[in-house]
Length: 127
Image (cartoon, rainbow, N blue to C red; front, top):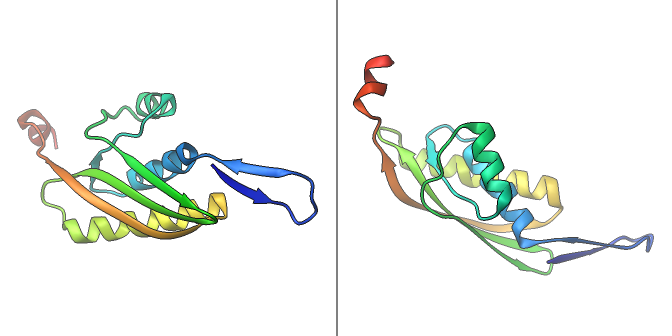
């Protein structure tokens, strides 16, 4: 958990690794071309139900040190996308979103492409 001391000494705010993990996961899913992704925890199941997506693969790992975060993500991407472009967008969006929502400084976003999603034949015909 990350502690934030308010200058006015009102109290301490703690942000857990899991909260940062969920924020990073949602930010990664916002990028077109990212297909499969899985966070851990109950919030993932709710997110997947609302978005109608299946979770593929595992994970977000967050390492917090003082006011800095390092984030590792495993994703699946659509076949045919430029992987480096998609990964760059994921890194940028995750960094921007986590910093904006938590006040942490993101020192690194490491993205591991674990799988490529090939659309099923029925989906190709419908498009």
